[in-house]
Length: 249
Image 1 (spheres, rainbow, N blue to C red):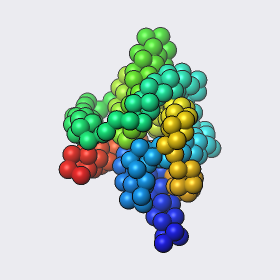
Image 2 (image 1 turned 180 degrees about the horizontal axis):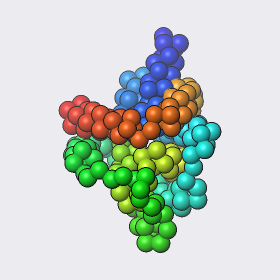
Image 3 (image 1 turned 120 degrees about the vertical axis):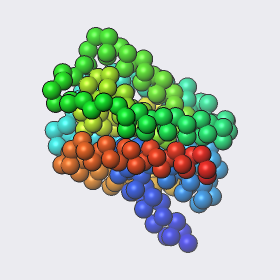
């Protein structure tokens, strides 16, 4: 049964790593898996962050191998989210999340509606807005996204992929590269907080990370090859699936 548990973790991690890199919502696959395997919810939440940290590192390397990087813009947002994540993770150590999941489901429905009805922008003809007031607006927004990411992480990719293209005029591909860098940075602070409160099963986290890292590496390189269209499709599908799961399960 131990080997079966490891296989389940790696498969769930691969799916989550691939999905998270293209869109988001992979946490809704790995968290229930960890709980099913016997971890308390708070420990499952913390354990999942180990896999996410390693996943995002490999996703960053995958994007860089295809010459896709948004540094230093991504670093500014990542630092803001890093400090916000300490707050969110501290809350997550003790709070119960049933009501929060209902609220999150409503948010996810709103996100998918906005993605579906928003006017199509030809981002290739628009200048990216990475400086001045747009940079500061994103830094502030990502501080609060960091709080949310530190708390539960599930679905944060959707929110970032809604903000970055329509505030900073970034393509979905470059938005994804920014997203994984930011998530990597703020997950460091979340791991520190969960570890401090002894809410991490390190062995399960590292086994899960094998799958997450593999899925992230393949997903990052594949998304560069396929372009924005496939990313948007993944976003819409995963937001819908996540909203239904949060509300009914």
